[in-house]
Amino acid sequence: MIETFKAVLWSFFGVRKQSEYEADTRRLDPRAVIIAGIVAAAVLVLGLYGLVKLVAP
Amino acid sequence: MSAAAPAHGHDHSHDEHAHAHPTGLKRWLFTTNHKDIGTLYLWFSFVMFLTGGVMALLIRAELFQPGLQFVNPEFFNSLTTVHGLVMVFGAIMPAWVGFANWLIPMQIGAPDMAFPRMNNWSFWLVVPAAILLVASFFVPGGAAASGWTLYPPLIIQQGMSIDMTILAVHILGASSIMGSINIITTILNLRAPGMTLMKMPLFAWTWLITAYLLIAVMPVLAGAVTMLLTDRHFGTSFFNAAGGGDPTMFMHIFWFFGHPEVYIMILPAFGVVSAIIPAFARKPLFGYASMVYATASIAILSFIVWGHHMFTVGMPAAGNLFFMYATMLIAVPTGVKIFNWIATMWKGSMTFETPMLFSIGFLCLFTIGGFSGLVLAITPVDITLHNTYYVVAHFHYVLVSGALFAIFAGVYFWLPKWTGNMYHEGLGKLHFWLSVIGFNIAFFPQHFLGLAGMPRRIPDYALQFAEWNLWSSVGAFLFGFSQLVFLYVVIECIRSGRKCEDRPWEGADSLEWTHLPCPAPYHTFETVPEVK
Image 1 (cartoon, rainbow over the protein chains, first blue to last red):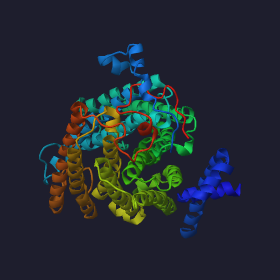
Image 2: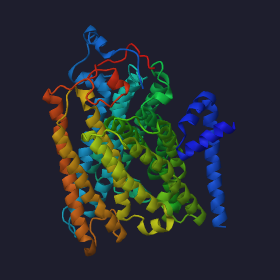
Image 3: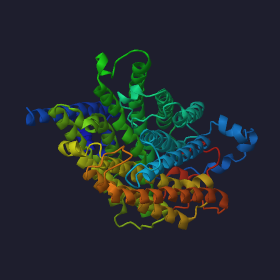
Image 4: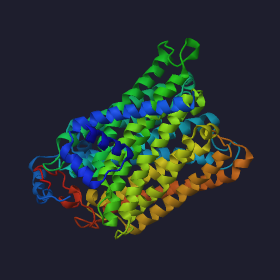
C-alpha cells in the first residue's frame, strides 16, 4: 500500500527512477494504483483547500 | 521496442482483390477502414482549417487599421465566434482523430479499430455539424456572436443561428464520444501479444488519456448547451437572472468542459512530438514512464482548474486562490515533459528534417504559451489582463504553435507512410520557416497589445494600439498564406511518384515503421504480430 502511494505521488510529480519504475511494474496491482490515484487527487484538492483556508481566513 | 514477427503488410495485397471494395464516392461514404476514415478526418480538418483561417484573416484585415473598414461590428463578433468554434471543433480535434485512426491500430498491432462501423458514423456526423456552423452565417440575424464560449445572457437573445450552433455542438459531442469509445476499446482490447500498455508508443498513451477526458467532459458541454436551448425556447431560467437563474453557473459548467478541452487538443500533440524527437535525435525517448505519468497527472489536474477562466466574475478570494494554486501545479508535469524532450535531444545525432523543425518549433513556442499561462494563472495579474489581447496571444501560442505545429510535424513525419511517397523537403522547410516567422509576427505583438490594455473581440480600437495591430495583421496574412505551401506540398507528395523507402526515418522504431511497408497496405496486421 505504501509502495502504491509512493508510486502515485512520484507520478504526480511526473518523475520516476527507472529501477523503481521497473520494480513498480512487477509488484503493483494496477487497480490499486487507480484507486490510490483517485484518493491522492482528492487529498490534493483538500490540501489545496486547507492551504487556501490558512492564508485567506 | 523490438518485434519478432516479419512484416505482415505484404501478405495481404491479394486480399484487396479477393473481395470487391466499393470505389469512388461509395468507398468514402461506406468505408469502415481505419485508414480511409483517418484520411477523411484529415482532409475534413484541413478544409475547416482553411475556413476558420479565412475568418481569421477577415478579422485581421479589419484590425489592420483603427476604424471600421470592411465588416460591421456584429459580423465581426460572428467571425471571432465561429473562427474559434471551427478551429477547435472542426480543425484541431478532427485532425487528431484522423491521426488516431491512421496510427493507433498500426502502432499497437491491431487490424483496425474495434468498432469500424461506428467509426464511419463518427466521421460522417462531423460533416453536417460543420455545415450547420458555417451555414449559420446565412440565416437571419447572422451567426453566433457571443464568442466561442457561448455565454448567456447574450446567447439567449440571438436568432436561430444559436440553435444551429447548439445542434452542431451536440452532434460533434456525440461524434467525439463515439470516437473515444472506439479508441479506448481498440487500445485496451486489440493490442498485439506482447504489446503491453507500457510498451505502447506515447501517441497511443496520450490518446487513451485524451479519450477518457472526452468521455468525461463532452456530456457536460451537451448539458450546458441543452440548458441554453431550454432557456431560449421552453421557458426555463437556468441562466436567466430575471427568472431566478444565474449566468455565472453557465461559466462554471462551460469551463468544467472547456479546460479539459484544451488538454484534449494538446495531449495528442505531446504524443506526436514524443514520436518525432527521438526519431530525429536517434535516441530513445528520455523518461518514457515519466511522460506517461506526467500526461495522466495533467489530465487529472485539468479537472480542478476551470475557475482560472473566470477570476473576474466575483468568486470569493478563497475560490480564486484555490484555482490559482491548482493552475500553477500544472506547470510541474508540463515542465517534466519539456525537460524530457530536451534530455532526449541532448547529445543525440540530430538532423533537422521538416518534422523535427516543427517539433522544435513546438517545443520553443509552446513553452512561451505555457509561461504566459502561468502569468495569467496569478489572480491579481489576470484581473487586469482578463479579456485583453494578452489572453488571445497566450492561447494562440498554446493551440497554434502547440497543437497545430504538432499536427504539421505529424503530417510530414507520417506522409511517407500514408502515401508511399516522400514530400519535397525544401518546400517543407519553406513552409516551416514562413509559418514560424508569420506566426510570431502575428501573435507576439498581441502580448504587448494586451499589456497595454487592448480588449479582445472588438472591431475598432484606440489609436495607441495601431502599430502593433498593423504588424499582427501582416504576420497573420504571412502565416495564413504560407499554409497554401503546405497544401501544395501534400498534393505534390501524393502525385509526385517519388517513392520512399519502407523506413525513411532510420530512428523511428514503432510498429508502423518496423513492420509495415510504405505506403501501408489497405489492410494491415490481419495476422497479429508478436511484440517482444
